[in-house]
Amino acid sequence: MSEPTPDDTQSIKDLLAEHVPLALLVDLLGAERRTSSEILAEEGLPEDAWWEDSTDDGSGAEAGPGNVER
Image (cartoon, helix red, strand yellow):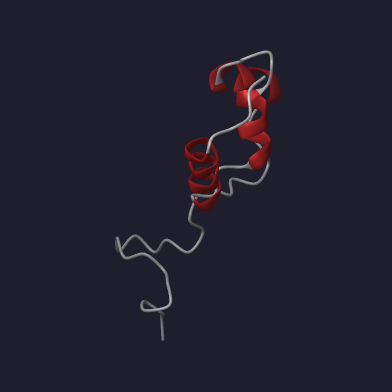
């Protein structure tokens, strides 16, 4: 296996910054080269749907520092 290039490591950092789980990246980069759909079929969905916004009020506005409900 070759050493990662700076571009490789930056790509991984970018994915982590976008909240892609490290475990998923490791699974996808592992020697088995399974697809994400194969991993999902094997492992199933997590109990906590962390990717869903639990603060969504249907207004289309995203929660954030500049968009606080009062």
